[in-house]
Image (cartoon, rainbow, N blue to C red; front, side, top):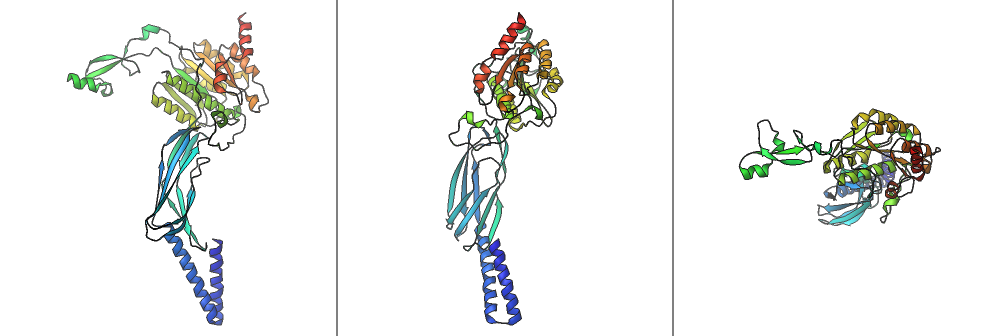
Length: 424
């Protein structure tokens, strides 16, 4: 708008001079400048009106490492051409370069473009709105107009395929005795029977009811497979490493998408374990304390996997409760025979004490220690690794830059030796 103010200033000077002296030259100059201002404003107004811009997003959810694709179409609805139109995208997705400058858009013509962006950061982002701007040929005046709505995009955390994760089958005490009828809806359908007054409507099996011409309901059995819980340490004082991200190239690999941050490693590990267990039919729950308490009860369904992944997508290490306090507070959720996967980068061995109490209560524990020293922490994680092994947990150690699937498949040598020495 600098040129616009300069032209206005020249117009006012010429007008004051014309009023003071009455010279025709100054009156002509003032009139010309005023006409120039009116033409510039009118041209800019025509440039941002009678436009239609459409935005097509091919997916509303994505995952770190995946490519988000969007398609844009800018149409001129008037007969008059548009000299130039700038489309500025206000999306918050990192690296999403959807802004364009379209030059010389003729009457009733349209231009389109497609944008492909590699998702490098988990979280919830806004796609849109769009700011359309245009102006006169001399660049005296520019006008902006906000168009389009805002859509939410959820980017799930990065996951890895785990071939041999050390979580056991975790069959609850009682085994075959648990195969009995229950009034609750479980994933195990046992059979069908005739409808009885008081049965829930959601238990009616409609295809069979239509075939038999009478209402038929489903019966269920108790689930003999115990729950698996994922506990993630989101205490602000228990994480190390940088939090900045770099825009990944189009040929980025999975290994290059994780920054040197223990928080991102913890979230990626938790998401990978949840995906691994859900794909094998296990009931999975999530325990974490960030700005608030986050507990997702264990269930077995595709919807449950999406629910946990959504929570991990926006989770941040801003909690005020250390990991040992979280484990003590939420120990009542863990039933005998269930499994717990505890993930933390806190090098203090104090969280091995509640782990020992949990293992003594009949819960199988897998402790995944993220080596904070490899992320820049001053303290080594050797003490907590040894304490967890002595507490009866299956210990796995993940270091910065290390392959997560390989790290979760191999047991630390010093922890294995420590357990053997204790058994002797």
